[in-house]
Length: 294
Image 1 (spheres, one colour):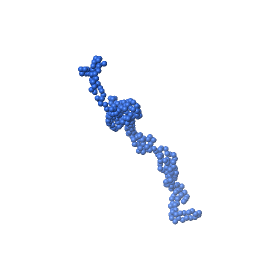
Image 2 (spheres, rainbow, N blue to C red):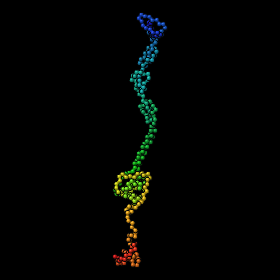
Image 3 (tube, rainbow, N blue to C red):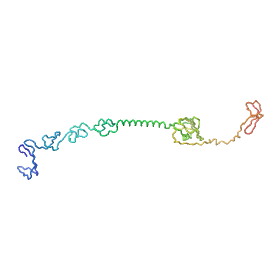
Image 4 (cartoon, helix red, strand yellow):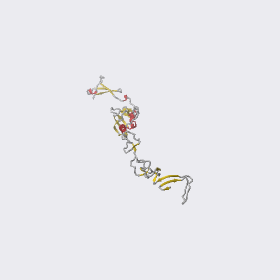
């Protein structure tokens, strides 16, 4: 309703329709609100925030229609929930991480601490030193293990010299058992023998650092001394087959000179007697021969 310089907003409580040169009579009173009085706005619903891009300076009542521009991305510090129009104001990115330089996880680009600081540098230094010491122990252990590993050697037909390289003694018969068929004999520095054909082990145990001579009937490749876990092989001496095959001979069956005496029965040496001296030769089978010294 316009009345001179005054403007009113009339809100009836019943529908109305325009009719040219017509008249509508309201049964109920209508709501009348003064908008402009004598050319001055007295009521206007619009955005009353001057920071909004749709700010209306003449507005008297805010209607919640304010529109703001700014940063619309929540990963920037410039972001606010009220902004609906992006104007390129996003500049400072939010970076989460460890912001304490005393920790290994420190990130010099981080702007917000997210609780990821766990290991202090001093603690890491200790752990690294422990790890280095552990790695050194592993290397030393590997080196020692490699030194204790069997050293393979090739044994050839005939005489061979081999060193016993383990650091603990072991039964020689057990050490040589798997190649005993090709061993004639083995002996140590004292001349004691290991003679498998006759079941003889005069060496006993092989001693660390000692050398041994082995006479072989054939070649053996990659022979080495290994830990047998205390295994021993007891050998029983036995006579060789050629000795068993010999015919038995009684000592009396072999004629032997017992002594030489003169005619007076005195034992003499043949070399000291004069030529043509008669001598009696007594044998173990009871035979006596009388001969002249030649």
